Image (tube, rainbow, N blue to C red):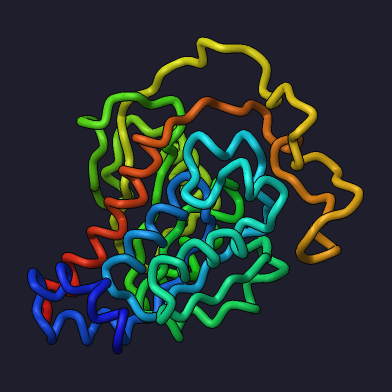
Length: 267
């Protein structure tokens, strides 16, 4: 145990040995480690969760620095999951971090054994892929939590938790429900979401980062999977919206808190 015992001492003091033992045995997978997922992962590792799998296809862009845990001027261009893994292991060297640079989609879904996890966290932006993950996660044995849209928000007091079908005022949740209804499909079970009814407008202009340091578009050389070297999401989005760390982090920390509290209550 060594250093880990000291790192987790304040957690152990509050939650006790039984809960800490359970956290150490948990297997959690987080899909998407941007402004929401990266802070969720960090909170879980700081709290004593033993195994965290992080899934994301992107590399760190300079525009990520304002809100993502692993994004700094030193990590721009690095594979996101690898940069986050490095940060998480600096926090707790004993943690088991599985970093997977992959796009979760219909073609890759079979690569993930969702039943092997205790908790699944959805922090995906893509509507189609998010819907697929919701369907598969709700059929699995794992507990499941999902993040709705965290962009275009400023007021931290408006962040809420509700069951998916009861989420109000969120365009992403509305779009997901409309698609489920159109296809006459529904998730196999209920699940909780973090969301906010607040919806602001971008005051600024231009969706690009306006700097030659940007590593997102079409890098000629770079780390990670060669098949994903030129992959980036920005150009595929109809609109890029502004977002702030104090909101995205609250979303991620809230999901982590839901997991931690659930374990605490039951152990």
